[in-house]
Image (cartoon, rainbow, N blue to C red; front, side, top):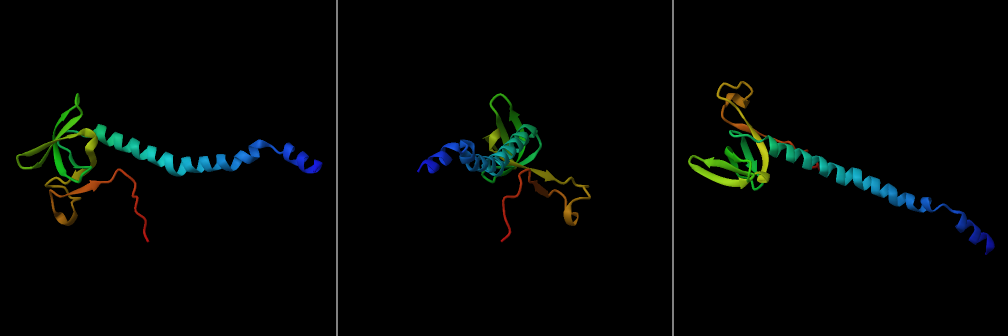
Length: 127
């Protein structure tokens, strides 16, 4: 009995906490840090929106920015000819690259079509 008590008293308490600390580091690098990076990218996108940009809202509405009220953080989008909606600036999900009429990078020679600029990393996995 005396030998068993002596070995338990002599062990370092940090050794017992090491697996818990290791789990905390893994959790931080796999979960928290990527989320912070995505959040910073979204904030940068929202700050960089200008009048004339084509965007997609978080709800999936496509439109062109026609006015920005910086005091209220409200963006006015034209979603069709003569149809404008007001959304919060934080409601913008993505920016769309649009091709000019004489843009050679347009696929199949088509102009006026755009590609969604995906500022966020792809979350899908191939099965």
